[in-house]
Length: 380
Image (cartoon, rainbow, N blue to C red; front, side):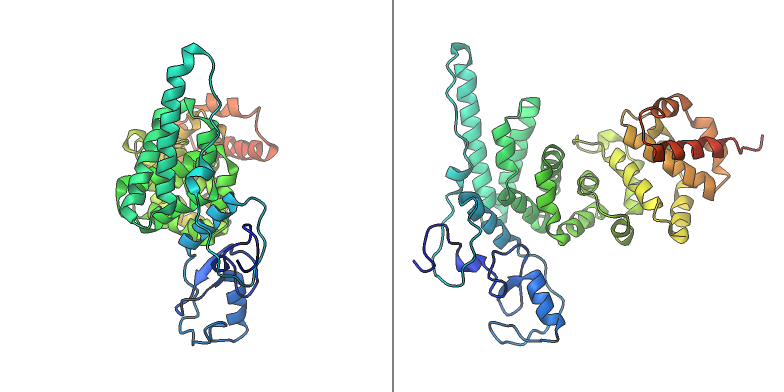
């Protein structure tokens, strides 16, 4: 075995330019795969041929991340922790024994009263392992889609009794990359909703899931594209990914955010955060881009529609972040479109706003003071 040792990565997992494991692999039209940054630098220096095949590269725009390869690398790393050793040669191939790798050690339960429960848990854990293996290893889209639905059903059935080992299994990079592949390739609405639900719930519990998703820029673009096409639950995942304000502005999500704000909660699947809540918070962030034309356009859409009443309703939210975001939106509306002050004054309940004043930052208090200041400008 060239390169030596079972912990040496397969040569296909290593960039021929950097000599290191791929982090963001892209496969050119020539069939050769490179680390994105490395091949981009090569092309930026004026080269127009593939460094390995020496064939002409016709398209200078790099393709999307090779998620299949990224998923396989993540599986290999999970089997070989701490073995990110670069290799330049060797033809070995590591067959991932994923099921053995992900299956947690089951601690025997000695209490007679819990023997049945333990048996049920063992069987459920085994079924989950099989579904995860299918998701990560199958090259058939239909099989991967069925695996997602099985995992989501397991997750829903467990509810608050969710086992920590199960959460750990599902948070592994190989599984997260498998979910991303589903978002990229599936056209089944239920499968897409289930995938977004799982990623959102996992991301809300484990920050490492969000870090895995943000490693590849195109992941956010994929999720936003699905959101704008009508997969409105995806707004929760966008919120968890915390994109920058300029990035959100570039992706033109306002129309979709307003659509979600106007929807009833029961029209969408239950998730770790209400899609309306996520939409209100993201909309407020976009409004603070300080570009007058952008702010004016958004405020015009809000002030002239029934969304403003829904946003007023967010002032009574149990979530302080949503309340503060709603106040920020309403302040912008009153500053840009004074006529909406009467509507806001007629509908607003000030008690929840005042309750929020104590436990927020100085910056948020300043926004609240602006809110009251705008209200007192009413021409009575």
